Length: 315
Image (tube, rainbow, N blue to C red; front, side, top):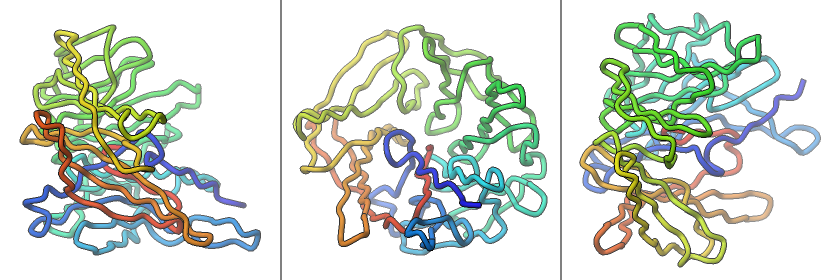
């Protein structure tokens, strides 16, 4: 049976992940992306093969031979089986042998098991999201009744907070103290310490949540050319929105904006090129100076087309 490749978050949203800060890149490697290599089939197509892997900022590639890599026998959805935290410091996956959640730590190069959290047998998994510092993991899937469920699990206590029907988790603040969720009409920001509602808005903007738990940032791509690319910033509490034009190279597309723990605002872009039959996807992280509107390159890496399914941070 052919295995269906599902290319995740790199194409548009999802996105995505956090990479090294310029000043710490050499000292503290982080996970750039996680995923699975692909092998050629007789019909010229590709199928996922080998173990899940982590590609690090120092050039290392770490294999996870004990990781579950499929949702079902005939389906591979990268976002459902592996997640990289927003800061790139951890990656989460489920152990194949017993379904226990594992969190791989970039600081130690080792994985620790979370016995309180296991693979949800009652769900058809479609998304896994790990918070910064690895405290919380969002497990989203579909029940047999075809109702979608999003459960936020505390990896320390094992306690589960289930979002209201129809709501999805949209990501955590850089310190993991707040989480933004929503549906097609409303955004809700929770304080993760108590899961109390910090803010609810019917007029909102989906994007990356800042440290204050109310400021959201996102990119906007315009096919009218590089001068039309933007970073949008909205304060959900006041509704005030600002726009910052960003100038990228020709063929470079903004994927997402991201806040870090120091309040910096970073932008992830992607550009593609073809060499023969191979496609190379270059991802670049920039730091945006909101005063001068200048972009400073932090990190850049190429994902070859041989990596069929991959997940960037917070995707």
